[in-house]
Image (cartoon, rainbow, N blue to C red; front, side, top):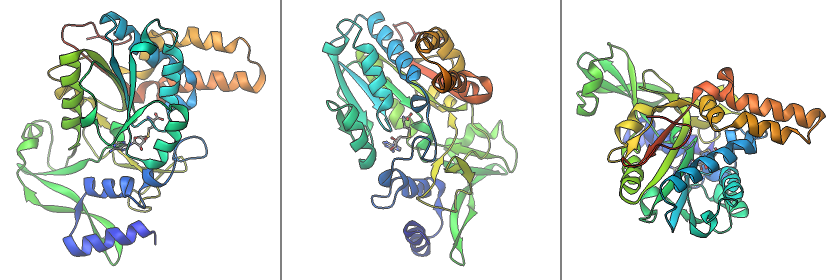
Length: 352
Ligand code: SAH
């Protein structure tokens, strides 16, 4: 029995079944046993691999996109370059290397990282020694904000509700004979979900992300007030319907209740919810990652990088390009949405 399973079972015995969001928070961020608190889950040897870990081209193009937005908005100085959930720091390091060639950028930039995991903060500080770290987004400076979040929103805890007549039952996690099990709460009308009565039927499951509105308010208000742009990249789609809670261990999908604290827990991101909370700033259409990277010139960049390569290194490089852009790999499942000031032009690669 993992230490965390013990803690969860005791908590359920004391206070009763818990919402999926509480289960996710404990599994991912428990100070001693949480998944992100205790390890670096990224890379081939970890449980999953992300776009910046696949190829430097990802961070380079994100960097050029943000730098172009910064130029389009008159090169505000000073400004904040922020990342939510920077993992190993690879994406930010690639962004900074690329934007160092943009005149004036390095003199004006202040790097701010929002990261909950002490283990990952330690990795990030090796690559980005001059950053400032934050526990959450609220403490980011009140300055022009250029922000990226790759595979951050999918790690935020969600709640799940199953339609029952004109009301909802919450999917909860309880225990039967010391085994964690899913159950349903009593029926409750939920004003937050009133609009979902139109597009669901009895038995349908919808997901909400309680932290999302507050995070989006912080981003959008700064961008509209001071200028800036945000690129939010993740797997998911417009409009959430159905159970997307997923546990990954060693690159395999497993039962989300089987290895609490030892598996990554995520859900698909509902881009409609992100757009709904983008006000007072403007938002772009949701664009597939493959289309976005092609528009920013990934194929040209891939050709340049391929020139000195041969053999296995060349094959790996071609495979990485394919993996980031091909519709059957990350190109279609992953989406990008941009947030920008209502008076500005959208970030390159995205359209309204
Ligand atoms: N963006 C990185 C890592 C993605 S993994 C990449 O693309 O490789 C998710 C990241 O978000 C990790 O760094 C994790 O520690 C962080 N994270 C998860 N939940 C968080 C929270 N509630 N607050 C801050 N950081 C969080």
